[in-house]
Amino acid sequence: SPKGMVYNLTMSSYYGGLPNDYATLVDGHHGWPGAATNAGTMEWIEADFGQNVVPVRVTLSEPNFGAFQTGGWSGGGYLQNVVIVVPRRYAPEVTNPAKHVTFGMDMEVWVEVGNVNEGNNGDNCITLPIHISRGGSPVYRLCSKPGHVYLATGTFMFE
Image 1 (cartoon, rainbow, N blue to C red):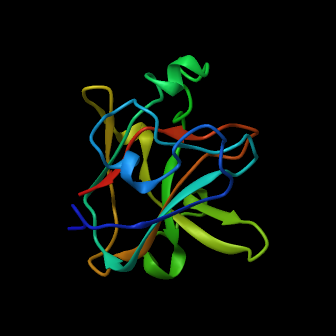
Image 2: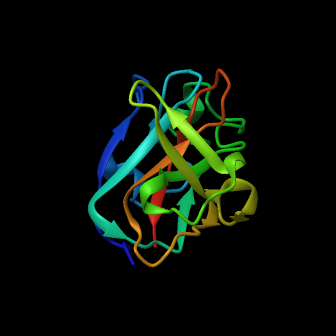
Image 3: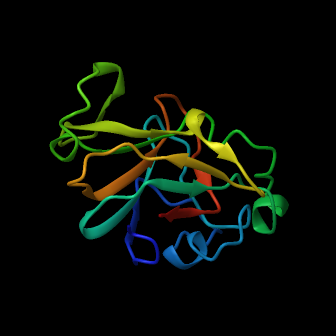
């Protein structure tokens, strides 16, 4: 389990005025400022553990409080239809093309291993199951579905 393991955070773009850092995404303050991208067609927030890990769930939270609230972010919808994906080579068991996503210039295919629509709502957060084989993956991306949208979360914690 990657619970408590530090990961390297990278993002497709960085929305100014928010921490956009690992520490605020794992501090347990669900709904408080964490990370957000600019609006784009395939925005993503990535956790790179540097070694294969096999999480069973990930916790996210909608922007609601602090700078999210005063900056006009609250109101929800920033996590609507998001998925967690990994490079296909780490989850070859995902063969359904509807669960494949291709990013940017390298055109690498990533596959869905978690979907916010399968999540359970908690105290200002949502926890969704991760479906990946025992080998795991070193990288996990939270990504928006195609469309011109912002992506924001106050929490990005793995167990």
